[in-house]
Structures are given as structure tokens and as C-alpha cells.
Amino acid sequence: MLFPTFMRPILRTLMAALRSLFRERPYSVIRGIFHGGHVFATMIRRVRVNAVFACMGYNLLTILTLERQEKIAAPLKN
Image (cartoon, rainbow, N blue to C red; front, side):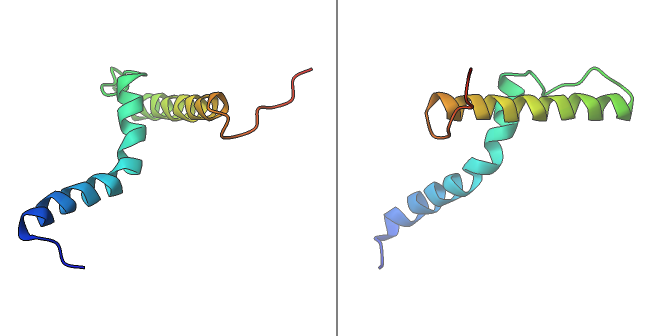
């Protein structure tokens, strides 16, 4: 299917945005919600620990969001 010439750059931009959506969301959430864009630790070990906790927090936030949207089943509560 051929599109008019003026539509091709628009479609190319939309396809690039869709491809990068799933790669960039974790970084934007970690930076925006957890303020993980800048680390004040200077030792590599401390930076790694900080990054691990930011990733764990992102995973927990994603699980809670999916439970709230009822896309996954919530655990049984007694």
C-alpha cells in the first residue's frame, strides 16, 4: 500500500515512537517518580545498589498498577 509523499515522514515518526515506547518507559518512570536520574553515590558498588533498588521499585509499581487495572489477578487475602 503506497501512501502519499507527505504522509511518509509522519508514519515513520509514529512507527519509531511505537518501537521506542516499551524501551523508554522504565527510564522515564525511574527518573520521574523515583528521581533516579542523578546518583550522589561515588562508589560503583553504591551506584549499583541504588540502581537495583530503583529497578525493584519500578517492578513493584508496575505490578501494583496492573493489579489496580485488573489486568492480573490480585493475590488472595485472608
